[in-house]
Length: 182
Length: 324
Image (cartoon, rainbow over all chains, first blue to last red; front, side, top):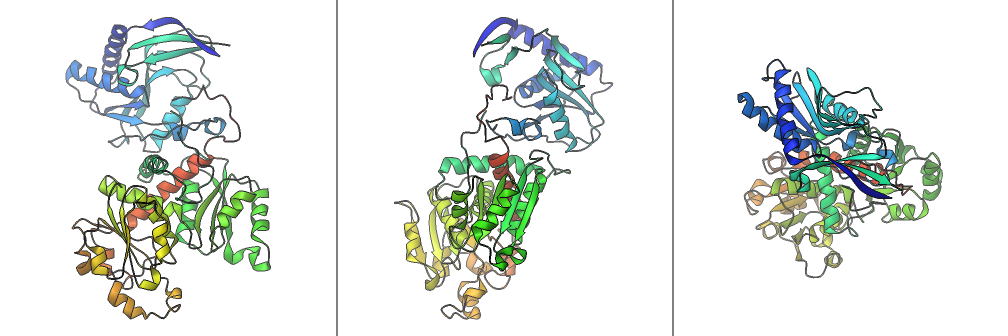
């Protein structure tokens, strides 16, 4: 099986512009930011959440705390994977009880990652509200989960893969559509 | 990211590399966090079964493994020496084969004979975790000690470690000697001469600093870590040693502890007998890590169960769909 790049979906500038817009939308639709907190899902949700928090600081000086969530222990397919994933620490340095949470991830696909993230969050307490913010939404949901804040919607087939590359992790900055070719 | 090591069995510390040990300690960190969650129960190992086969009485290790399995969502089978059919004359192999026939995903085993878990591992196609065998090894105890030391000291490298008490009969001492010597620790064994077998010096790789000392003041000088062992009173009569003589010469007291470094850690695997091997003022003092060790034991055992039976080890399926 080969993986071929079909097209580039976003450049570095477009990613940055989208992050700025998402930050504005979250501030606008939250009815106050004092109770707000962002939760970045490992791995690429983490730099995205930090960038959105940074952008929000620029909007009206709001300092929104950012937590990090590793969902490995909450995955529903662990007993089916042959290669065991490495666990990483979660780091949510604030109580989630009664918080207005925005979960941040790079791609929304089946919805299973978000299901796992919500299980993880509810083990920590009872948030007042949980919303979802993703850079790319690509359809093919297997669970009744939708994002409140979407960077860009992309029509895909299920043999296609969205590759989000971020400087903090990948030392490059772009979003690609690639395809598995047998 | 996929795990760099496979742990088919966990029979002892001896065959592990320093990298494997550090990996196990790193994988225990997320489970230390879980112990602080208001809701500590995960569903990660839902549908898996852990067989706990304790052929020798045990309270804390059994409860720790049982709690670790429960917090991961696994079910348990419990076999305890007192109620087992061993009393009726069944062989070890027949007993574990019977357990195996009920299809657990791994077996956690304690036995009074050194090498019993190894024997079982060779005869069953099931992951075996050694929860203490005779005077051989108690690997999860050494791992939880290492996690405790690393948390407090930031490193395991090059520490002065004094192990105090009945080293001859201690599997905890052996597993710790194996582990610490892989990180270049300088090890001092201290106790009555009859409990300091010379062959322990052969356990460690060449070049390791390991010495046997019968005078406690000398043994504690400059120690970073003092690992106190339980005095197994049932062993005291072997070559006669009066209890009060042991207390007089070897009890870890605040005065004696002053010989060690000011921030030296005091560890004890439990059960601790206050007033015998350890003075209550030391057991409850700021240098004591005893309760941290217990909590860390849960984290280490959860990590081990997760790594050994979390993923489907029976197939080498294409894993390209796995999230990283």
